[in-house]
Length: 140
Image (cartoon, rainbow, N blue to C red; front, side):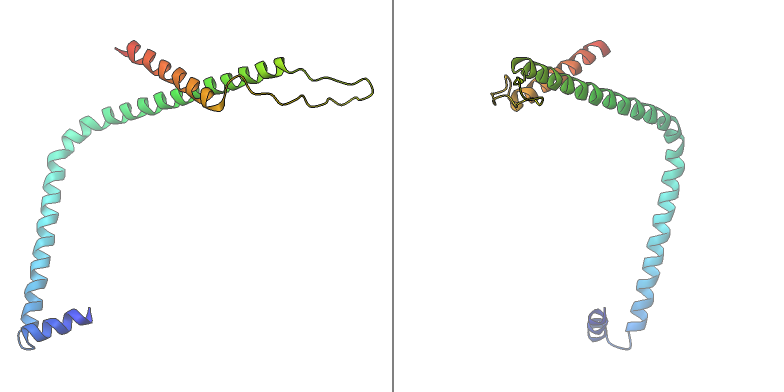
């Protein structure tokens, strides 16, 4: 700020600097008044149309949020069902064997799962996409 003032003092000169500061201040005040007037006139013109559109936009926004929440719930449910069925399949394939002298179960030998994580994710995505496709056809 000091550098700008020193530069202005050198370029304009000490006798014309107060006049330049006054004219800049007047220009800034006039610009602020013009901006405030423009803002008020736009608000007056747009207020009636905003009153009619705002409730519709709020309803559409609420419906969209509810739809997204339902889709997320369905997606989470299908993923958890897929994971649960995967756990049931792997637990049914590998029963825990107990020895006669021990009361605690021994861990079963590790085996490869019937579906990999990538396959589970891909399956969940297909289920989610099918749900979205059904809703789009129902809406139209």
